[in-house]
Image 1: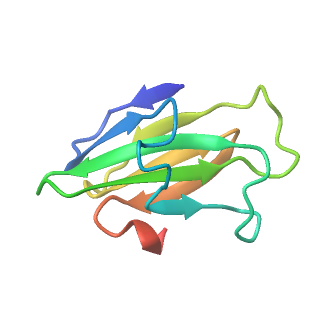
Image 2 (image 1 turned 90 degrees about the vertical axis):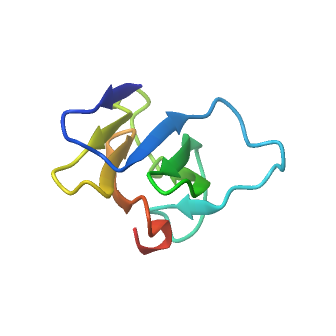
Length: 99
């Protein structure tokens, strides 16, 4: 997975290899009407203020396994983009439910 930190950011994103110890995620971002069909990108986010959350950006139904995954900073220092098998999610680190 690619991490591109070209722009200054007010958060840190870390890729998770497995679910957190609680077994639950704070946020699930899907392009398939709330259904997680084929995995996705698991991540942990910590904001500049110290708050943190975990989430999954789901792969799209029928997405190509070879498509790129990545996390990209943006010119907006509170926001980042996650690519999950080519599907883009624009996320505000401070308001992840408003993706």
